[in-house]
Amino acid sequence: MWCTRQRGDGTTETYTAWVYQQVWTEHVQPSADFRQPEGHGNPVVPMVQPAHRRTPRARIERLCFIPGEPCILPEGDQLELTSRMVRLPTEAELAGAGAPQGVRAQLQSPYLFLGIGSPDQPRIGDVRISYKVVLPLPTATLFGLLVGSQVVPYPLPDRRPFYRVLRGDRAAAEAELKYEHRVLSVLVDAVALVLLWLAWWLLYEPLRQALGRLPHKGHAAAAPAALMVYLVVAGSTRLTPDPALLPLLVAGLVGGVLLVLLRPWRTFRRRSAAPPPRE
Image (cartoon, rainbow, N blue to C red; front, side):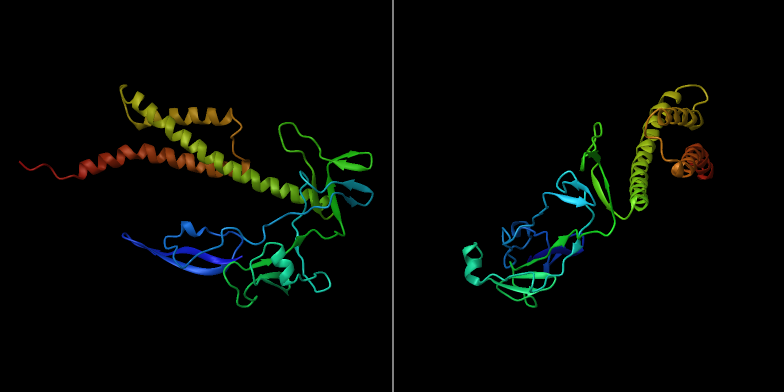
């Protein structure tokens, strides 16, 4: 929809400059949320709402499947609209369907334009309709549970059923699944690494306070103890990072331990270098 968008154009300590632009977007900002709503009104409800349409049944060679939920289909392609595919409604038909007075339909592929203005000079509230479709694939791979001649969702315990269509043959489909799994594993391992580092610092400070009351107190006693507890917790949980991240984890741990161990030495040097107090 053609509407007004608010964005900040520079911030200082006292104020933020707000700029209002008219753009095509699928996410309309409510005018009530604008800092200066006067003269920047957006329609509350667009003339056309986004929608998904799926065929009730589809076929890959001799196998039938249901492309609706929970089946995951490949990303759709932009459909180029032509005059042979689209019959433009008249202004009377649009008004009868609830469109504002004066709204016209125009075809500017790949969009079907509905509005009072024109595709080149739209007005606030005008919309562009486009379609993404999954066209017949020359080669596709379907994953699921075969029951007779129909493929149904493959049930998995405590997880979403596995029911998916991928482009290409089986080798290409498996390669895509492995790549997605690898990317997800790296993201999960990165989060696990952050959580384990937080656990390290949460363990270190209480141990430092407890061991600080013992003879020969200092960071040197608390840091190895916290590191041992940290490694035991990390090794006994499922948050152990991927082997590809282990060098980074080890380097970070060694650097953190050295930083903790050298902190008293830096403090001692600063105190030694301080000038003597004046009498």
